Length: 322
Length: 300
Image: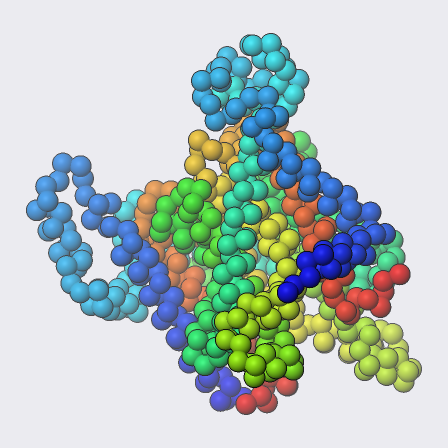
């Protein structure tokens, strides 16, 4: 197990290095920061001066080392637009993104998996057909379009839930959270449901196909032949085996949710990091974009690492593989 | 010599057995064909050219569906703020959305298949390099990679096609490699190698046709994914330019008017987008189901 973890750790480090190189090359070499930062009436000398100030006259590898060094020290630079350290901006907005992502994940798993197992076991029943029908529609409807429909139905016509903003926040561990108040939860409802719909459909499909593949394995027939009760078969044999693909996908999907929250946050004006990224792209606020991409990359590398380890815990075959 | 007549006959038979007895999949296929025809014929059947600012009349702006335009035509689906006929805009938007997705998926799939075949036949460092790159790509959500690309290179129809290609190639390379590796175990490949046929010829003439089936099964899913991704990116304002609206950008334009009750600008492109993706997905689901041996048990 330890050798497996070390190997994965090493690979994760390499992955982080490569991604930071890609972001660096993309943002600092393809684009020209001097053109972006300089005013219109600047002379060539002014521009060269700025380039020296930014360290752009140094050779490429030295620039990269400076860039990586700053990141390791936690220095992501200062936002052009907000005129504040980028890291502060991101840390401040991260809780808002995390809370809707986690809520969406909880809704997705707790609704999607039971529906999937049901429609897998009772395949071709009317209930299963209805579930699959709605799941296909949910799966085929782009996230942003669902968001617009949710706003139209629940905020404009029914006037049940607010369509934008985060509402009242309360402090816990020094961080502002919306889920601690009724008003905050009401504001969270639509964005979280928006993120969850896709999750529900995804989990339903995964659990359904997993159930159907496992249902006809020999050990299931054997378990039935032994006379084990139906519930026990489902819990001990079915659920455990379908959990393996679900855990992998779910781990990756936490990251996916945070990535997709750019869309949801933008539509619902939810003040998280996704909206920050999109606003920054529109306003060419490069330090923020670079910092977001680097941090999200590190997060993904970390999630992938954790998922691999969990995978190994759940499936002994992987743990013992050389 | 490849027997094309025979292949066509088998293909025909296979299409029949995929779709017969599955009315929803047939409806999806028909719907998709209608959408493609509408997109192809848009310049001839659309009432108006929505890109030509000369024919637009600002006096016709924001008319509800079934209104009469200044020149006597009827705007069946209403008009937007610029006086653009929504029906025409949707047809042209559909054309652009489908074009972008088709180009991105065909190029992305081709790149993926070639890389997969190379990885399977060359082995060694070529294989490791390609497969590590695949792992790298697969571990990131497509939307983030696309946003990253568009943040770096700027927006535009060509840029969004590149961004979508990045999203398509990796899974196809992985799939091609694994099916090509299986194929290489078979004796006819050994026989070909012993007869002194050069390896690129083995790759293109024997491996390619025999290992491409699982990839082709994935193509419809990739297509609907690309359509959704393009719409999302355009909706966010980092996709196609404003002068050539795709379905996603049309929805974004109308989004500002939704709260004031002018629903038709967003709703019609939205319905078409969902129907398009839905049609492709039901066909894709049926094809996948047909190709999944585990599910055969329940086929009645």
